[in-house]
Amino acid sequence: MYLKGENITFGYKKNSMVLDNVSVSLGSGEVLGLVGDSGSGKSTLCKILAGYEKKYQGKVNLDGKEIPTKGYNPVQLIFQHPEKAVNPKWKMEDILNEGHSVSQETLDSFGIKKGWLNRWPNELSGGELQRFALARALGPETKFLIADEITTMLDAITQAQIWSTILDIVERMNIGVLVVSHEKNLIKRVCHDVVYLNDINNV
Ligand SMILES: Nc1ncnc2c1ncn2[C@@H]1O[C@H](COP(=O)(O)OP(=O)(O)OP(=O)(O)O)[C@@H](O)[C@H]1O
Ligand SMILES: [Mg+2]
Image (cartoon, rainbow, N blue to C red; front, top):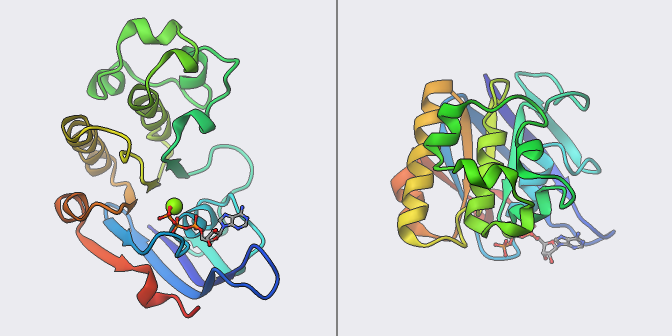
């Protein structure tokens, strides 16, 4: 299976393009790094690939088909600030199990403690909340994970633990991952290959 963005052109404002004719392809089980200057459009491309931003020119497809707009999204996007991805009025247990029931094994592998399940999102640290976001995103129907600076706010040890868990799961489930990061060491350690956005963007 593959996730492809083909000839993606996009700007937030008229006559000011962020992405011009960008093409990128990610296969099942592949861990691909996406690197580029700050403001070069990485997060914008992530949103387009995951179906969050729709007003682009070009094509995004999963094995030649459009990404489904209803039901579970097989392309899961995780970004730097997990607090923006959760409903502050829901308890963690409900947030976690919204799309599907997350297994105890997954909770354990991300180090999610039982006592956290009964808390509100604002009662957890950014790192703890990100573990929930990942456990929830790596559901049985997930085919691709778009990871946009997901461990930027964490210390080195926690970052290493979380990535080791992600890599175990994606390998087992044959999920393809796009890894956006400014950290060269992380990209080198976890990615099979790297794409430089500045090289493939014609702006
Ligand atoms: N909602 C928005 N409305 C208008 N302009 C935006 C919006 N979001 C981003 N931009 C602009 O689009 C450009 C690309 O932003 P984007 O967030 O994709 O960059 P990035 O490569 O992810 O940067 P960083 O490495 O700092 O996260 C920037 O110039 C930014 O100011
Ligand atoms: Mg960004």
